[in-house]
Image 1 (tube, rainbow, N blue to C red):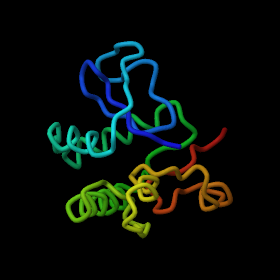
Image 2: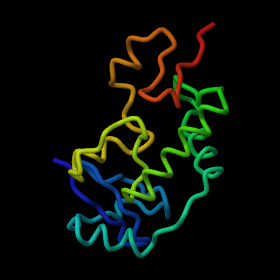
Image 3: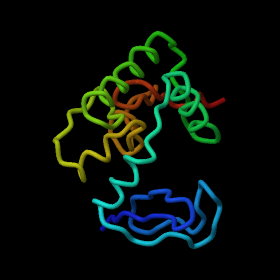
Image 4: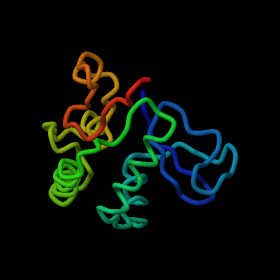
Amino acid sequence: MRKFWRCHVCNDIHYGIFPPELCPTCKVEFGYIEVSSQEARKIMSISETTMSKEDFVAAIHRFTKMREFNVNPDQERVEMLTGGVFTCEQSQGLKYCPCRMIERDFESDLSLICPCNFLQHDTYKDKPDGECWCGLFVKKETT
C-alpha cells in the first residue's frame, strides 16, 4: 500500500510503498518518515512553486534521457498537449494527462499525472510508433 513520506531535513514529500533511501532534494540518506496524507498535502501547499510551460517541457526532455522514449518531435503537438497539462493543473490542482479522464479519487488519479505510467498501456506497447496515450512521448527509433 502506498503511503506519504517526508524527508525530515528538507520536507521533500514522496508517495510510494517505500521511501527513497536517498532524498533527491537534499541528498540525506534514510531521512524519510511516514506522514499522514493531510500533513503531506499541507507541506506541499506551503512549498508550492509554479512551473512555466518551458520549464515543464525541459523537465520532460530530461525525463526521457537514457530511456527508451523521446518527447514527440512534433513541436505543435507538444505545445498543445502541455497547454492541456497546465489547464488540468489550473482546474484540478495537478498536472493530469489531458487525454485521460480523472475519477476525482485522489489515490487512483495519481496515476494520471503527467508523465503518467504510459509504458504499461497497450497504446504504448502495441503501436509500432509506441506513443503514449496522448502522443507526448514516442519510442526511440532503433537502428
